[in-house]
Amino acid sequence: MTQPQTQVLAALADPTRWHVLQTLAERGEQTATQLAGPLPVSRPAVIKHLTTLQQHGLVSSRRRGREVLYSANPSRLIETARWMANVAATWEAGLLRLRALAEDTR
Image (cartoon, rainbow, N blue to C red; front, top):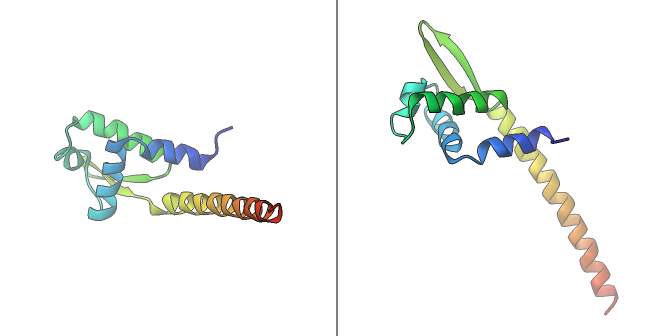
């Protein structure tokens, strides 16, 4: 079974989705039209990317009249960063044990 954090990383592996999330984090709320402006993809494509980001908890949306405003949800990214730090710490501990074993056999 895939962990939720790996699904977040998979969602962020797409350069367009990464750009959209970064833009929302830097500029705050944006519409799909605003986000599509500087990108080489259509507004419908941006909406699909936003849907994926929203499904993984990285983006939230709210209605303002006829517009839908999207914003970054940093808590999900922070949670994933913590998970990655724990994985790195586990690997580091394993490597230190391996190094100690290698030095003991000298």
